Length: 229
Image (cartoon, rainbow, N blue to C red; front, side, top):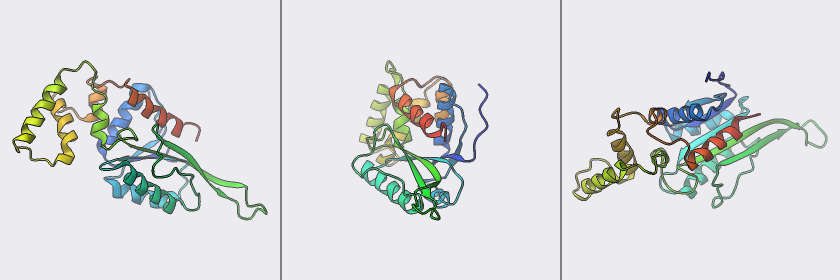
């Protein structure tokens, strides 16, 4: 399928290259038009920097993908605060800290023509979307999302997990336990037909199942966010 020309007025902000490649691989798998630009922000601080210039730009639709890390509530609180601060003229309607939607957030924000007597004429609007990895409900990162795509009948991951557990119990791991999911999925990928395949290509090569329920939820979020905006 030939990709649609990317629209610079529709942007998806992600933390790194792996996120970018996974998004494009899933778009190809589901035949979604790639009518938006994926911006590798090189970390969460880069996403905040992009948000700081979004209010003055002509972006019509903007999505944000961030890792939950330690707590969904604290991550959503930080994203919520940044959106309210950097889109203050648009005043986006955002859920409370303890009610983030399981299917990802999509909302619209508006500015109004202040020269109109009733100050109710819409001048500009932006569609805003937020997805908190892995599934908007539990702690984790991109690699936890990828692990959810491993086929149900896979016999390799139980062996990999047992090995990882043995290494950690012996204190031989060089990584911190906060990076355990990265170690686990990359160890699994190291044992595929093409060892060490990157995350995005592992979808393209068919090692992972893009028809899993979490993928359907995620791609539906992308489609709703960037269509007709």
